[in-house]
Picture 1 (cartoon, rainbow, N blue to C red):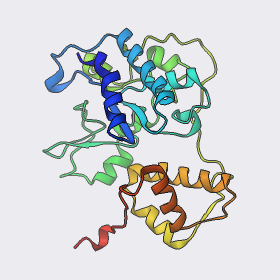
Picture 2 (picture 1 turned 180 degrees about the horizontal axis):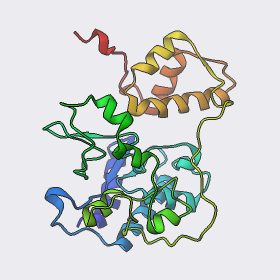
Picture 3 (picture 1 turned 90 degrees about the vertical axis):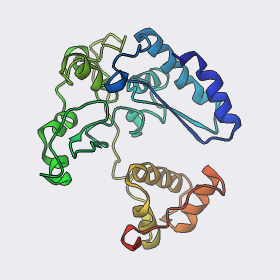
Picture 4 (picture 1 turned 180 degrees about the vertical axis):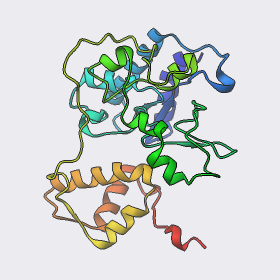
Length: 266
């Protein structure tokens, strides 16, 4: 109900000096099942606005969460946009079952909080075994999507929300009815992965240790950004000093420093 307030929220966050603003889109499940969602047309309108916000707020990352169509709209505006999976940026799309999971209070492992779709219970089977071998999780990693999601040229960089069709009629691989896009039958737009050239920058032992101490959900993004800077500046070896320089440049002196080691926490 508050989607029209987003411009004021974004401006307010920017004035406060926020570096990142994540806008989470509601999926009407659980206690929200009886709430009224915005329409597919409003959904498209808001996502388009958020894509354009990146041009107006250069010092603040603006991202949509739980709204994979964001990737498609960003690509339509600029195929070289740094926020699409076509350029290797994974965040912002649906991460359910691939980079993300939820453990319920009673131990059930599900692909995301919006889906009570259990792959098993971690009290009976280890998290690692369920994560790596479950048919449920594999169906998200190697999906055979149905309807227009399966036909769409943006399948790999968007893929739609899997929770919406699951909540609606129990089939998480069916098309996302909140997407207004009509597939044009073109070649599938591929997700970019690191090439050997992109992996050619070396890390010294200390910087690699620090990299591995960064929470896993941030690690790939940090690694890619540091290596990109090193290549552009013709820096052959990444050091802690370089990481510190980039950290302060990006976030200022108040940014968190990941110097902890979980093995030493006791």
